[in-house]
Length: 226
Image (cartoon, rainbow, N blue to C red; front, side, top):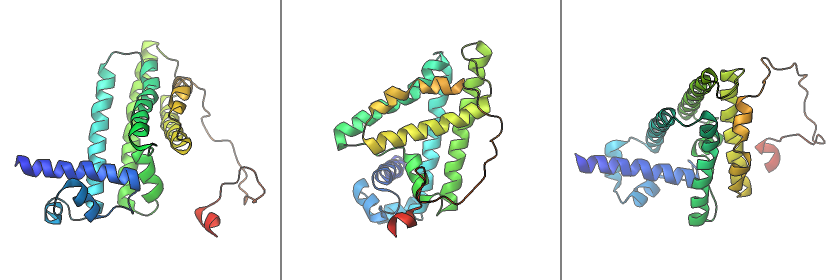
């Protein structure tokens, strides 16, 4: 039983690493088996497909995320330190990746979302659930900080959503520039954002077709490749 468990854990670990490094579509079952040192028969004993395996890696990620948040909640550290620590801990991870591989690969969830959320409903739903759970955990953390007088949090739900978006944006910037110091420079922005007066409703916006002369125009992939 132990060997079977070890083999399954190895497949999960290797799949997580390879998909993070290369992307979902660039990794095959053969790649995973080779890196794990297992035959395909072992792979198909546990998983029917690469798709099923990747969904299982997301389940495992969610479990680890839950454990990490529970440890944070029980640590007794000030919430301001915990919020900033989310980015400073990412800095440490990026520095290890930069030393070992020359660059960091970004957030595994963010990368997978950008590649697959519009292609695969199962993956999209699993990722959305993980992000929603993360947001719920942050809401709890912010409300506790407000109750204790540690932070002034006008709206915990909006602040939590903004914090998730902030972390993803900082992570993307660090990956794009290959500059882990971004995490340190922007870490305390987490505390400021948690206490910011965010609008309760979006301001009305007239939606128009963007022109290519617009400096803020964000093109679609099809426009880049055409």
